[in-house]
Amino acid sequence: MRDRKEAFIRKSDILLIVFIAVISGLLLTFEIRTSDNKSNPVLTIRVDGELYGTYDLTENRTIQINDTNTCQIKNGEVTMTEATCPDKICMKERAIDGTNGGSIVCLPNKVVLIIENATDSGVDVIAK
Image: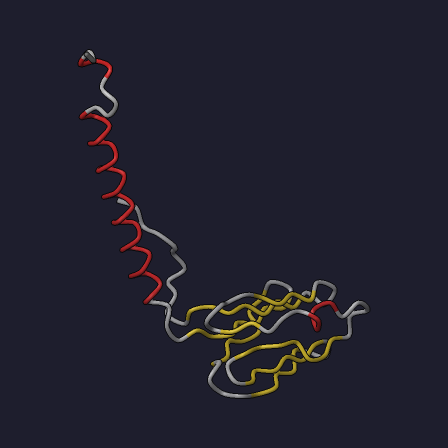
């Protein structure tokens, strides 16, 4: 016969499992709700840390950034098409878009292309 203290799963173990499952479900629900709010993404261009411009991804266009870089918005995707930097790594980067987000950086010219949410408040999470 087994002693009551040697039970395989105790009542406290079951309560802990239920508590973890409830917390996980709440976090998953919160993540799904916050990801639905990311509509209307835009391209933000910064040069040397200063805002150069913000552009809608729905309009196809070519953007000349100072006299150093050129980027292109085509079918909701952004690529760096020209750069005066010696290595041209920024031109080899994959396209960024509103679905996957991302950034393209031209370090020698201090140009950063970032996909951001147009209605973003700048706050990731507020804890009470």
